[in-house]
Amino acid sequence: MLRRARMLGVLSFLLAGGVGIISATQTWAAVQRADAGETLSVAGADAFPLLAPLSLAVLALGAALSIAGPVLRWVIAALGLGAAVVLLIGTVPLIGEAPLSAVAATVTEATGLGGEKALRDVVAAAPATAWPVIAVLCWALLAAAAVFVLATARRWPVVGRRYRTAPDAAQHRGGPLDAVDSWDDLSHGTDPTD
Image (cartoon, rainbow, N blue to C red; front, side):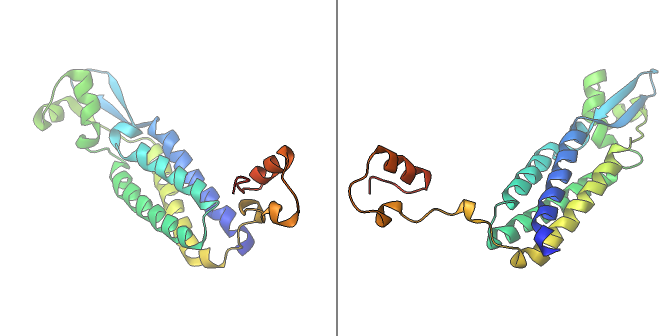
């Protein structure tokens, strides 16, 4: 299980962040107007402004988790857990019926009316779509993945040698360096000018 722990953690972070980015562009609430038969669609990013930036941050954390050392794994997991909590707190109130504050910007843009009393007169209902529920499930997965990473990160296998620099090739050969040797040294991560 620990061999795949890194992969599970990274994929969970990437899945949650990816679904968050996709859901930010989807309709989270359909506002039914009392003054007309028109229905207004409210995107996830409009209903919950932190959705897109936090989802992008979760994607970046997932990418960083794939190559992070033991200490950074804990930092990344703690940041992921914090993001999951903020995303859950912001998304849960949008399930079922979206609050007026979540749809106010879209209604104001469509009608030109502002203020809570005017908006209450215009909005008959604002039922939510399935996207907030899907997002909450992803945030729960993100929180579980962050806790999993916190619990297992110390025992993950060490990153492979492809991320380490090779020993100084110039020390192993005698004589002057030619152009090919210099390029090889650069490829191995050493500076041939030293």
